[in-house]
Amino acid sequence: MEKVAFDTLGLSEELLRAVQEMGFEEASPIQSAAIPVILAGRDVVGQAQTGTGKTAAFGLPALQAIDMNLRAPQVLVLCPTRELAVQVAGEIQKLAKFMRGLT
Image 1: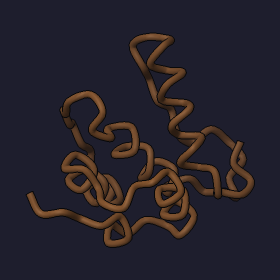
Image 2 (image 1 turned 60 degrees about the vertical axis):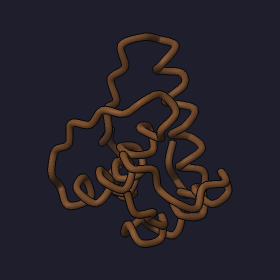
Image 3 (image 1 turned 90 degrees about the vertical axis):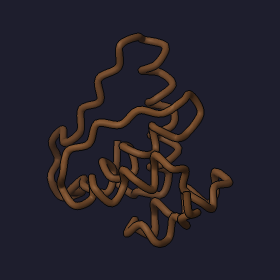
Image 4 (image 1 turned 180 degrees about the horizontal axis):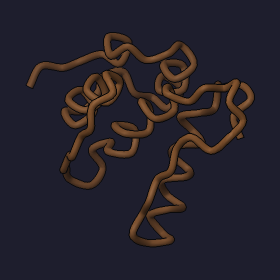
C-alpha cells in the first residue's frame, strides 16, 4: 500500500501538530483508509492488528468534528473493557493536546 502523509488527510493544524509531536509522519493503512471516509461523514467498520493505530483512525476525525462552541457531549467512545477504555482515553488526550477549550 502507498504511504500517506498525515498532512494530506484533511486534518486540522492542531491535530497534525499532536500527531507530529507523537512521532508519526505517515498514516498506517487503517488510518489512511478510514480517516478520509469518516471526515466525509460516512460510517466505517474497520479491523486491524494490535498496534496499527486504530484509535487515531477514529479518534482524529472524531476530534476534528467537535464544535468547540457547543458546550455539550459530542463524541461517545464505547470500549469492551475498563483497561481498553483507559488506553483509548489516554491516546485521545494526546491527540487533543493542542485543541484549546477541550475538556
